[in-house]
Each structure stands twice: as structure tokens, then as C-alpha cells.
Image 1 (cartoon, rainbow, N blue to C red):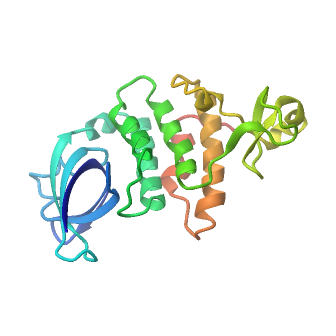
Image 2: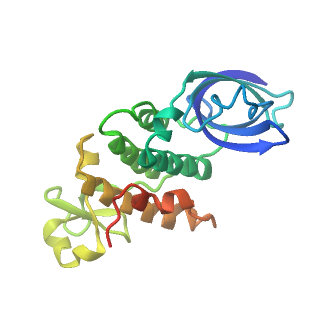
Image 3: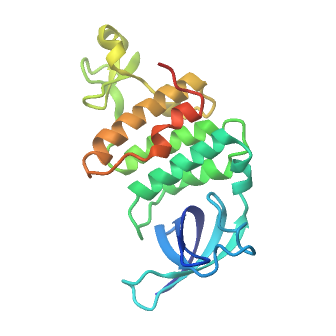
Length: 241
């Protein structure tokens, strides 16, 4: 079985002296793991870095076997993350979530767009917004998307202000105000496709996705929430007591 694709490196695990098991998220085949000979040699160290955009040639004699990868570097994105601790923290969170949540060898269709946007646009001023969109649409991809269309209490589509942690449904201002300390903020910038949200808006969104990912995916599947993601708000300077 052989095919070619492109995507991003999201995990590396040493195998032997200089080889590695590489995890990549690809445009047409989703998450893939494969063996790369001499990946950790001095000659190749610049290629095999998290976030790098690569072309991949995957080959396996038998479909059930782990494939071998031949990889060519397209864009060395890693350097854009290594120079900024906050960007690197966000990349680590994204890589951990993708590695833990996404199925292998399955086309993830339009969700790839949000991964691609975050990594390829990391040098833009609004890079953090692209990360927030990634996490929000990860919920949708995993089948635990939120109902943002109308108020769960009144049915109204106006003045939506909160999200219920119990139901994942929207709540309007009048119904939610007495319980606002127990509710999440409604993600207006997501609904409006506004890629210039404020930092508090992003922080509110990431607190909400943290909760629903933990509750509706990791706990259900008996998995540990990735530490890189658990500490992300602190590492981004967005955490408030």
C-alpha cells in the first residue's frame, strides 16, 4: 500500500539510535504514524520538528503493518514557534489534542483547515484566534458540538449570553443572569466568524472547550487530559483565579 500526501508533524518518538516513529496530521488521510529511518541524525534534525509542513510518501507491504515514511520539508514552520514561548505552548496543546483525539487513517475533511490555519498563519497578529477556532471545531468533529442556536430555557434566538455546562446549550441573558457564575460565556466571536477577538474572549472560549473536552471525551474514554493542554491558559498568560 503506497500513497502520497502532505501535512504537519505533530509527534516524534525515538526508535533505536537515530530513527523515529513520526505522527503526522495529513490533508487527505488524517492522522498517520510511520517509521522514518535516520530521522534524528544531525542532517535531518531541522526537518523533523513539530509544526513543520511536509510532503509524505507512505509505503507498507501489508496494510496492517506500520508504514515507512519518506518525508520532504515544504515549510519550516517550527522556527516560528521556537522563538515564542506562548506560540510553542499553543502548538504543544494542539499536537497533544490531535494525537489523543483523532482517529488514524481517516480523512478528517474540513477540520484539517483549522489545523492548517493555525500553523500556517502563526506569524499573523491574530494567531491565538486561529487556535481558539481549532479547539471549538474539535468539539464539533468529535461529536460533542455545542448548540448555540437558541436559548435552552426560552427558545429565544436573541441576547444569547451563556452556555450551560450541563447541556452544552445556549442560554439568554435574562434566563442566565442569576446563574452566570456557573455558566460559560457565549462565544460570539466564533458564531460571527470574527478572527479578531479580545484575549478575555479567547480565554472564556478555552475554559469552555477545556471543560467539554475533558467531560465528554477524555473521561468517557478513560484517557488522561494532556498536560500540555491542561496548563495552556497559564502558559498563554490568560489564566485568572
